[in-house]
Length: 569
Image (cartoon, rainbow, N blue to C red; front, side):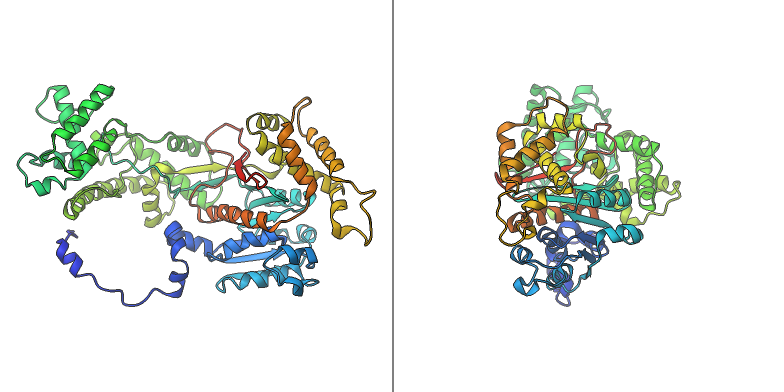
């Protein structure tokens, strides 16, 4: 089908849309540009549970409610205190004091987006863990902020690995969070690396077109509009023919390797110019590296071929992904659509970058890529049909478009990083001392809170007129934190003295403070990771690639707002 038309016809035939975008499209316009309709649909069908209704928890929800989360439940059996009213902007100030914290938080959040379903659950989480475990597993993601250690351990054990758990811990200006899952598959990773144009291994139709152009006699206007991929394919084929001393087609192998050869090749491109200001040839010279950068299957994608040939799928989603990977592996081994030029390569994508060219030449080039892409897609679909898994055409198109940047990430179970093995923690202290020290300090604080030490520093727990005498002061608590942290480490492991003094001092100063500034910052970061998990787009925090046997990453994001930085542990 010939879908091209003269530029004049195309521009004069444009009609104004029949009506204005609907309210939903206008509301979500900006985010649709980030994760498209498929991502928005996933977000609108997601169910999130948040425990409890703290300032940080509601800040996280705010950043999920605004973009259109489908459903959220806030679980909290406590009443609003004066401290809550002072630091949580989603409560109605002093009017909320004494009322259900969950109900008041939901009421405030629902004012931000009436298209979202919000529910308050005033049950005690301990009670639900004992009597309603199935309900907890019905959510896509559970977010727990500063939940007591024993409860968190039970919750994490229950949810693993079917339901993703996000654990957030904060104290004053220090915080950390982690996302817990066994495996996370990402097709639309939005990689900054674009798919190969196969300049060094041009498919037959592209090569034939590039060699057919009468560069010396064609109209000068047409000459200035030749797309750079065509120029590069032509220049490389001529270089190969000269090198092989043949007049016909070359072997399709070889490219400039030494600096002298690369310099001479760029001079060859400049010599093809017929006037000094041909921007398309200047662009071709700038992109000449594509001629000597081999088109290969990325190592991370090749690792997936082995990973999924050894593993057994455990769900319909992973089964579909495994089938797609298996078909891709077979395609790479044998592509009969163009065996001479594309053996061992990923399927071609029809997406082209912007380039210096006329509309006519750009469309012509795009048609060449699209025709070859369709041939190879059919080969891929033939391989996929043998897997006896039903995958729709839209998913296949998205998969092939992003096949060069597929990601499968692995996570860690909560118990494995709470706080982590002694050897791993000692290693992190030597390589990432600040991040590791904050992680250890927060873990020690959880331990002391479980032992009943930290609540003594909470003013709301003291009787009226109680003096600080007899209650632990900050120096005592710093010593307790240090002693607790040493139980997490191998004997003789040194803490970073200067950093540890600041970190332990901040924990001792505000062991249970949920500060609005920290809550707001955490709210944005955590919500961002939750959206990545829901939409299966972009790259969330992880413990590394699933195919890797390395075990040194913990998958924790650490936040220090004392010195204003974040890091990954």
